[in-house]
Every structure is written in structure tokens, then in C-alpha cells.
Length: 436
Image (cartoon, rainbow, N blue to C red):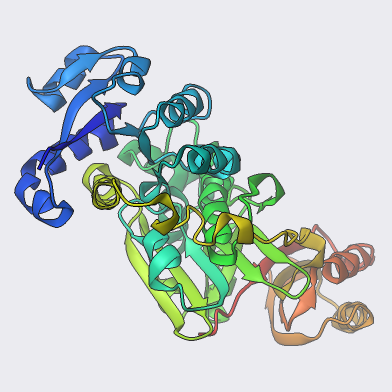
């Protein structure tokens, strides 16, 4: 059969990996797709580098619009990133009646609603498996494999940089700043690591998974973000003493009033499999009402792992290239007319368990004052540690609560911090038991 012609926009790490894997496994991919899939044109600013990666059989250009406007191209693969040029390219490709594959999480999380609406109007597909968790096929699992389930919640360790830092802080007892420098030296963290360590990257991915899990529009602007840059090594140590590990966790949960959508450093019981996902690896735990809890683990980045997801999308589109658009899997799993108008809950309304570290004068009566204020705000204590600070007349009191509403916890913290015996700001972290 006539090959499917692919135009590649961006020949960087993932683009180069896509070329390599597609050429190396051409026969196997063709057997699965039913016809050859061939990259015939690519765009990159550095043509010398692009030629090294693409070889001599791919036409190169420095203008990505040349790819989008080429009438011979069937599928455009966008691997440029960002939301400026990339958005223009994707919308232009759709307008030209071309299918699109992208690894651009930021683009989908922030402009997915517009992009999917345009694609539906033109009868083309936009696939984005590589936008979430690199080589882990979580989008296909949520959209197709778990379609019989009412998804209850999705929890993910979906940023390798942050997970590496937290693993090193735990294993070596180092401060955040020291581990960040090591992560930058090893190439796991960017020179400006803000996007990773402050939760933006994870929130983009979580926004996409939440939309698919619950059949709602993508709503990144309503996600709650809290990063790991202020996390102290002592809290990781105390969490371990209590039987927990701290991870930068993306959490989205269906509630009666709406949907939780939040990324924050979170305590997870050390006995949970996901709590033992270390280094730069990613994992997503999904709870469905029929199947229970299922976990998806693997590399969340890298040239060939991410290329694996890009090429899986190319194969899917090739199989459905001539199919009636009505018979294709919807972009967000649910039929466009069935997308629900469920609100994203404000962080003050969420209910979870909490870890509190309270630095206080080491004297009688302090604990009674603290527990009274907690009880006054409907917060009950599940576990507690008290650790004297060597050479000081102070102590750390560490409290794990039962389920409590965030706004009640905030009120209690204000009251506790106003006590004359309290000597510093209270550290508050969330805790998820992730019962399957």
C-alpha cells in the first residue's frame, strides 16, 4: 500500500529518536500499521544537526510551515514545544486537513480545547500519547483500556527531575539546593529548573489525564501547584520515621461537588508500590470502580522512550486514516457532546490527610493547646512524634491527621502559630493513602 508520509517539525532529542526508531523498526511497524510509515520531510533550525540525525533521504527545511503546507504530507509531528510557533503549526496543519501527533504537554493542557474543536470540525485526529509520561502508554490506557470504568482518581509521579531530587534527599540526607546542583550536573535538571521543581510540568500532564479520566475540558489554569523547592530534609526524615515517603504527586479525584486537580509534595505510605518509584522514573496509579487500582511505570522522558509513544500514535492514525471520523476514539475519550461541565474544586475545599511539623518551646501544656485548636476545627490526630532539638529548649511536634478539609486546616494553623509557645512557621504537607 501507499506509504503514509510524515512531516517532522523539530529534530531535537525526541525528533532524532523518532527518526531512529522508525527507521530501525520499519518492517515491524509496517506490519502493525498495515502500510509503511515514512518521514519524508523535516524542519529544524540547525540543518547540519538535522542532517546528521535524518540522513540523506529526508528533505530538510528551516521553515516548519513548509512541512505543514506540503500537500504530500499526511501527518504532521510537532516536537518543537512551547505554545507560540507550535500552536500556529498545529492549527495550520489541522486547517490543511492533516492529522497531528504532538509531544507538547503545555500546548495540549493550555489550548487543547480549541485544538480538539478545530480537529473535530476538519475530521482529523490529534494524538498526544508522548505528551504525558514519555514512553508510558497512559493516554491509551485511560482513553481505551479503562473505558468500562468510572475512574475514581488518578495519582502520578510524573516529573523525573523532582523525583530524582526527592530520592537523593531521602537516600543521602542532603539539602534541596545541593541535590539540585547534582541534578543539573547530571543533565536531569535544566539551568532554570523552575518548570520542573515548582510543579508546572507535572500539572500540565495531570490536567490532560484529568480531562480524559473524567470527561471534562482541559483546565490547566484551575490546577493547584506547589513545588518542592522549600522542602526541608528534616521533613523527609520525619516522614520516614512515620512510615511515609514524600513525592511530588499529581492528584486528581472525582468528588460529589467537582474535581480535585492538584500537584504538591505529598506523603505516601512506604508500603505502596508507587512510593518506591525512585530516581527519574515515572509512575501513574489509576483507580477504576471495576478494575480497582492499576499502575503504569516506566521512563518519563528520553529520546527513544518518548519516540515509542510518538510512533504508537503514528500507527494508530495510519490504521484509522480512512475511517469515518465518528468511529474514531474521541480526543478526550468521551464524545464531544458528552463532555461534562464539572467544576475544578478550589484547594480550600479539598479533603485529605495532613502532615504538620510544629516547632515549639519544650514545656508542659503546649501539646494540649495544639490538640485543642485542631479539635476546634474538626481535625483529629492519627499519629504523632515529638522530637527534642539537641542543645535547644525547643522541640518538633509532628502530627499526622485523619481526613480534614483544607480550609479548616488553614484556620487551625493560624491559631496554632499565634500561640506564644510556637517558635516558627508550621510546615504543612498533604498525605494520600492511595488505597486501592
